[in-house]
Image 1: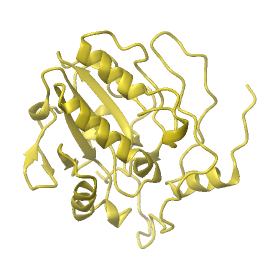
Image 2: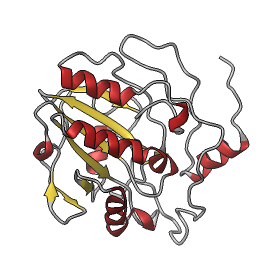
Image 3: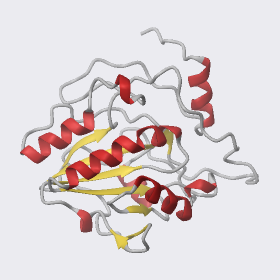
Image 4: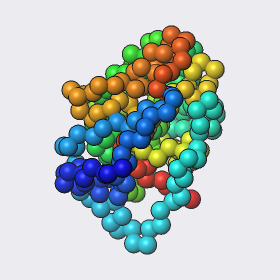
Length: 246
């Protein structure tokens, strides 16, 4: 398959975003699997600071290998692990579980992809919390990489976006590792029985004006209605999670 060359601006964003690998060309979709969201030519730029500046000899922590981690139909790992939320309360994935299902999203503050989807994600979370879905947002990034990903940065972001669900810090990155999460943002939706029924992107475009397929919204609607999710897995597009050292 011939690869389509990246635009100079998009290539810059990928490099700034922690040496992201370029998205692979879409493969033929198999049953229950959707193609990766397309990216616009112009993406917001990530802060220009070098994430490794001042950390000579910094060794990256192990990251999940492709194909490892939570599989469709599985239960949330480390669901009883309490994490500190922006209001200083503590929540686990299990403690926020909803009657109809539970949405877990790995995100952060600095990533331009997380920022691009944040308004839609918060609105979607609030809409479906009212319909019986429990929601928790998890920041697994090492704040030594980007200071804005600190707990104080999380508090500021939650306040700015008027989040009504827990925004918690994964202080060891172990939750992200257990899930096999790699990107921000990356969504995991569980049904009422606690089984993973959707994993991947929020929708198919950073630009809300060009969205054609609402992957997560469609999955949430199906779960609330007690129906099967048609597109159960997509490729999350975003910055790499900056795993804490172990």
